[in-house]
Length: 351
Ligand code: ATP
Ligand code: MG
Image (tube, rainbow, N blue to C red; front, side, top):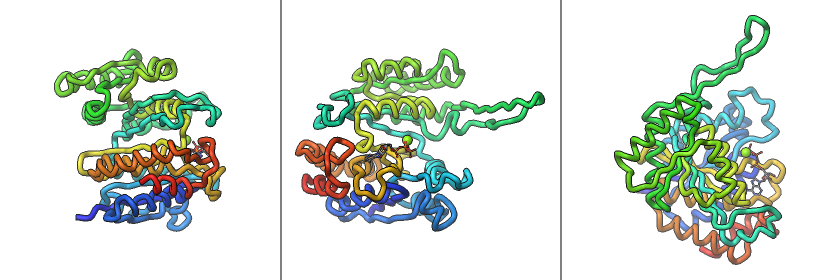
């Protein structure tokens, strides 16, 4: 049975970096069917919505979805519910991808930071597992109300259920078994009821099914401090939607390579995952052939591994990226002069 990858190139540098994924896929997995749909601002311009019902249906019918990036200044004035980013929120919700995998990896070839003009942490290899479809970003009630004295009151609600915590924790424990066998769970159980429940559920699941994995609990503020102080202590870092948003961006910076980091969002087994570079649409460099396509190419690598059951091809692709970097291939963001397509060429040559 043929497998289908749905590409959603999106806006800004999205189409440029996903074009390189197409070339890599043609060489590495010629039997994989690739489909494409409009997404984000482009979809709004053409169809009046940041994602169409038909594109959502195509995503749900696919084996994996790979997007480029959405948004940009052009759509800043669009009404809130039709903004490009809302297309992504809808897609995540409809695909029910609750576990966000964000590797923070410092590539050996880039560990000498002199060419990057910033500090990086050599050898860094953390997998952050962030809960993606619950918590304070979705909890009800929420809103802004006007009080009798004319003041306004804005409020959000952090909510987690046992099953929401358990299913994302399971992903973290499973990943740890294939890595260095350690999970650090970060919450604020000292001051939040939902944080207390989080700690209880993780502890209970660990005791019942994953006692072979080392489990450590850490308050989220301490986790932020430890991430900067001694990042090598982390293997898998499990956390909720809000803390994960912040901790994963901080961890990404430690690698010095925004243009190189992929991410995956996974749902139930057998359902398609959603893969995307962690960078945005980078309007400042869009259309100039300057974008580093490695984050998108490594997002494809994650799709091969976690949704398409092609670990062998994923290993080959990862090795090709490492080889291209070792041979000196560099786009501007990592201190070189290659164009987007030339970086694609370097990966294809290594393949
Ligand atoms: P978003 O809100 O969509 O996440 P952002 O404002 O956080 O976007 P990005 O779009 O990721 O930021 O861009 C941040 C900076 O990093 C910009 O200067 C951009 O040019 C640069 N950048 C982002 N992605 C890449 C890439 N793939 N290659 C090179 N530079 C990149
Ligand atoms: Mg951003």
